[in-house]
Amino acid sequence: MISITGTLAAFFLVIYLLSRNKSLATAMLAGSLLVGITASDSLTANLAAFFPTLYQALIDPITIQLVSLVALVTVFAYIMKEISLLQELIEITRYFISNLYLTITAIPSVIGMLPIPGGAIFSAPIIAPLGEKMEMSGARMTSINIYYRHLWYFCFPYIPSLIIAASLSGLNVYTIAAMHLPIVAIMIVVGWLYYTRTESKVVENASRSASRKSRQQRQDKEIKYQVRPSWKKILEVIMPFIIVLFPPIFLPIEFTFSLLLGIIYVILIKRESFQLKMISRGFDGKLTLGVLGIMIFRTFIENSEGVFNLTEIFMEAGIPLLLLALIIPFLAGLLTGNHVGAIGIAYPILLVLFTDSNLYSLWHMIIFSSSYFGYVLSPFHLCNLMTIEYFDTTLKKYYRDMVIPFTGTAAGIMVLSIIYYYFLNG
Image (cartoon, rainbow, N blue to C red; front, side, top):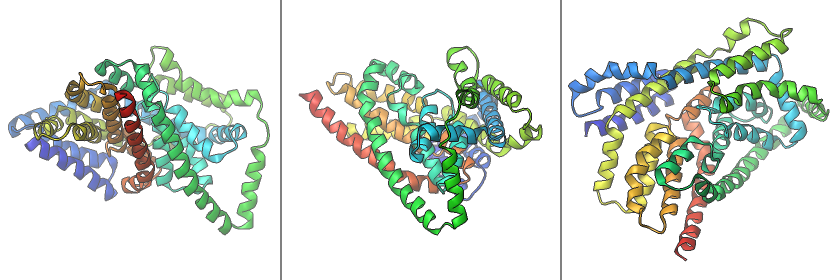
């Protein structure tokens, strides 16, 4: 019981500290301390295991990789911005995709197909200039970045959580992807209706109140986008991203190494504009420490009995199967901030209940979707916290902006589930 109380208390403590504008690292370390001392019913055992667990978190290869990754990403993005490569990338993208909305949503969506931990930090610096041009708030840019970054989690066969789900469920990964494909369509439609409608009002109001000088500046920028870029220029601008993103997928190298190569490449092609101080100015120590805090918290949660004990209570309470399929995966995703972890907790417990059902694939979709929502909305989700930190907004404002698109998506999945129910029973 202590472990459950400690886990839930840590959850609310982290949210409270973040809402009070405490640093990400401070909130996560405070949450870790609370989870650590309440990991089991034995206080002595908890205290004895506290520092070994902390050490385990610090030397974890994933922790080292992520901290290095975030540190290098912020340097990479800053250099790209200072030497105008980001602006050139936006201009090229705007030439081929004239609609601002499509541009700002396509970037996180494409990067989201790549299995990069905390990949939202890659797309955040790229969409920031576009968001500023459209006079978006930090919360709106965060919302768009997260929503479209995780668009393909339901159907792209190389997403780790989808692969794990296929393995644990016994369903073919392409069968799952095909069944989930309508969910992606629902998200695209909901996103289009929500973000274009609300943003058009923002842009319209901003344009009405803008001065003649501001309007002329926007017109000048629009004219610039009409100039066809040369293939040499296109290759020069996209090559840093090709170097950073694709070699780790096809070669046995880490993203941190490819990031170093990308930084070196940018420095070499823009050596006349590069200054050594850009490296130190680009390093975001606050964000890097925040990521370290997240990984420490994650390790303490994984070593605690809280999530598992909470799941057992729900199972023993005689709650209807549908509610179990909704609550357990959602809580697992919400408390861990890790989709693979949420699936690893929920699937072994729940899927055995539906093995003999002709609705097995439907139950799988419900469990997967519920874990997805818990994961994406989790205050411990790496992408959420890094993007919120980057755009200097708050968790509360981000949640407020995500209510409508995620509610719309959930409603769409509910309708789709009803359709599948009658189809599978037919």
